[in-house]
Image 1: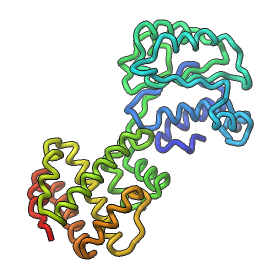
Image 2 (image 1 turned 60 degrees about the vertical axis):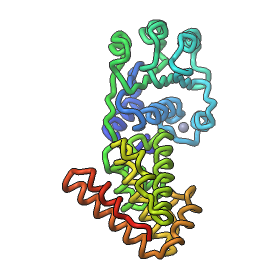
Image 3 (image 1 turned 90 degrees about the horizontal axis):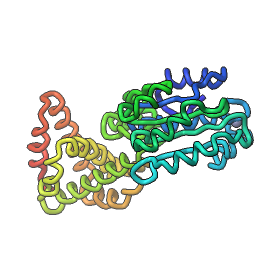
Image 4 (image 1 turned 30 degrees about the horizontal axis):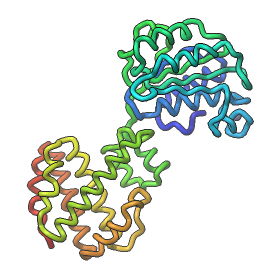
Length: 317
Ligand SMILES: [Zn+2]
């Protein structure tokens, strides 16, 4: 059960047992870092609870409706604008007494609980205190402390940990078809919020664009460091950037040798092809190896400046 969700195996086993034995707590609270699968797992628990076979089979009438986003016994709440509003809570509490429309239970998943204002929280408390036997709440928050104590105390709390390196490699490999080697490198990098957060993709895109610009400068004008000056000021940004730079250089080395690009880089195919063709394959391979070496040096010496010094001697060739 819950195969869609990577990692969190202990939590998945526990929840699967609860669903199977019909022992799910009526108020669960998933808490832990954002973007690691809490919301996906909450949704999958709701799917399994509503499923005719209690497995989330994917084929029964309930599962099909759930996948189509129109199961009438599933409610999903998230902040409307900046916060979860009291009107949203009223909507839930007002029809809580309706028995399930189609299934045996009603599942209510609420994401972003830390963004529930006090007025809304107090209104919600009443629903949470004595829910009808067929109602199950799954609350999700990245910041448990931001929930008022009375809400916290009425929930069974489930603590999520960050994904392990291996989990991330799995995700990259299985979901994005990245090969093991690259997945292994990328997993350590910027994909902290890989699972759900489009922002992780945004920073990937931004980095690749910057890296392309940087390499373009090294090829054309020898003003590479200017292109980096903004990134240099932001340590974390630079750390992420140089990892993506390495991934991109490998991509360029491959492309220059006529090897098909990773799906990962599909949207950059044109500039990558162009850049790759501007220098012989040997150039890109050297540059790639040079950067790997720099990164190795940085790891051994724990000194980021090694990178800046190293990049500053990359000559237009
Ligand atoms: Zn089903």
